[in-house]
Image (cartoon, rainbow, N blue to C red; front, side, top):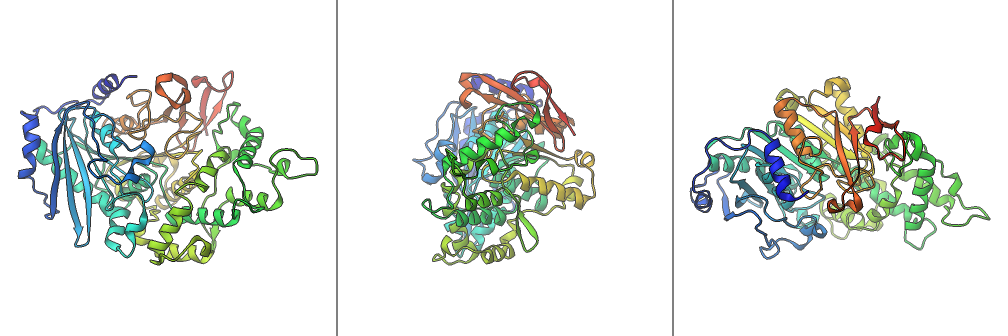
Amino acid sequence: MHAPLLLSLAIGLLTRTVRSTPIKNFESKCTSFASDLSISKYSDFKVTIAEYLPAESVLNVTAEGRDASCAFGGYNDPPPIPVNLCRLGLTVATSSSSEVILETWLPEKSTGRFLSAGNGGSAGCIQYPDLAYGVSYGFATVATNNGHNGTSSAAFFQAPEILEDFVGRALYTGVIVGKDVTKQFYAEDSCKSYYIGCSAGGRQGWKAAQTYPELFDGIIAGAPAFAWTGSLAFLGRALTDLGSNTSESWIDAEHFAALQSEVLKQCDGLDGAIDGILEDTRQCHFDITPLLCAKNFTGACFNQVQANIVDKLFSPFIVDGQVIHSGLSHGYESAFISVLTGPLAEPGLQEWFANVVYENRNWTLANFSINDVRTAIALNPYNIETIDSDISAFRDLGGKILHWHGQADELLAVGNSDRYYDAVKTTLNATSTELDDFYRYFRVSGVNHCFGGPGANALGQLGFAARASDSPEDSMLSRIVEWVENGAAPEFVRGTKFVNDTPALGVEFSRKHCKHPAVNVYRGTGNGTDEEGWTCVE
């Protein structure tokens, strides 16, 4: 579907389409606005950008000085500007030694809604696709650099104020400033306030619900980085156990592929369809015995050391009687090798422990032990773990949260989201039905970390993620608006699998992902591509 058609659908579907009093001379208002700007809570700020951008403009943020690591392989490059808008960039001091860089995009045709975007990993990178996503729906949209530039945590070394910005204060600052800017520009308050983010951005969404419950009416929190230390420690233990790629313990891509093939042989049909997708990874009780090395075995077999490591990878990681990581989910083993050999494993782990936990840049992964995990858990700077399960204040203010997590997530275990959901139930002494009033959780089959994967992975979950349409069925952003403003709570989130994950090639299949605790079961014919053949059952 072409962008102009998607845009017209978005504006038509999200009612209260345009403010009753459009701004006259929008372009001149934009370029002169900065001279009269004041921010009540932050007096120390500087306007760095104030420009009118017509639709289809293209930003060159590299030329503007964006850190090269923030491109994320092209995923975070700004798309063509979708609507006429005013782009306002600010630098806001959060302390005498820290500052947040943010951008607020103000669409000419505004719906009166406000959106804040999150971030990812240890990054300090403005998420330009999310800014574009928000304004395409008529939202005034803000995104920040999380208090530092680039994807490295080196900025946190002996810099507690910058670290505090990263954990949560930058999000708060961006929202407070963004709302103030929006109110002054349009001369009225936003009618509703929303948030969208995944990974560390999902954690930021939960940080808001737990610590700043007044900020948002609706939150989309995807694949949240709950239990931050546990996720890093899990990778540390895995890398330590696996050793070098020449050791008998190392498990290479061929072995992970063989593992996934055997898992699918044992578990793929449990949901009623043989389609390479596990609808409920918890039902797969895998037996590695067929892959153990034997005298006449051909192909990639596993010695006992490797088999023991596999068991640890897919089991909870327990330290001093406490589960700090839920373990990986079976069915998508091939994706994990890219994590082990990528920049988020050894480099990211080493940077966090060296710069934050120990403030000792001589620390290396070679020193990693269970005592390092204990030290990091005890430190928990500015409550980065983000596992406070008392979200009653957010509930009582009428907030709604759509929490989702891909079951094929190779980086952050879906089981961590399961544990948090259960903790909220316990803390609030609530049934799932009672939680449904404000908190709905979706375990999304076949989706990797935040996007991609063999399943129906296009959910409208992020600015750079594809979507079949802008209807509430196909777009999480439309869905949260429908829930907050019209009371239409989601019973499912619908995903689309495009051919080769390329919308221009057409739709391969679509699937409705069930609201937890229901799971999908196939009762149709064929290999599971019949959308109506799936049923949510508890």
